[in-house]
Image (tube, rainbow over the protein chains, first blue to last red):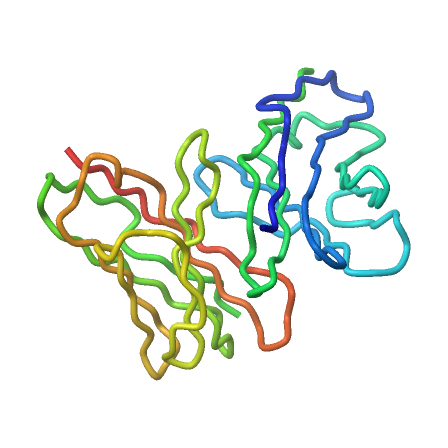
Length: 112
Length: 112
């Protein structure tokens, strides 16, 4: 079955430092992968997606993600973190029936 | 364009009662999906409707049901509420052939 795993419940980073939020996936066939962000008391917002093409995908708010087929990973990255990036981040994969399967989420805390 | 609208924002019910949640998608979007979000479980897919037909279903008991109207508005019903049904229920819509889900702010259901 298609699934994603987010191994870290929380990631802490100082403002201005690079950040990485990890995601690994398990799919049969070519993966359709996504990152969404959830700010407090809000629904999820789309950040970026990987369907095919370049392994480095650029998205909203300066975020990017690197698709690595050999490691079955799709880590979210940002060169310089902002306090306003503090939120809950979800990785997701589209399964064979076109459902979007989400990970359990990683809380990112950026400290001033 | 207005975003995805969910009502009510908060609900408090007692065990055994039933509840109906409403979702109005972005104008022109015919696909509506519902998710249950709980701490530690992430987002669990409930079901998806497209043009008044259920197109996909998650692994939830029959107490959880939904429907979609001709104007694409969708409702979700939970009967015989249990304490474990306390969660944030999120609705999302997507354009035809689109990949990006647009989420509402959710309905926070508390079952006492």
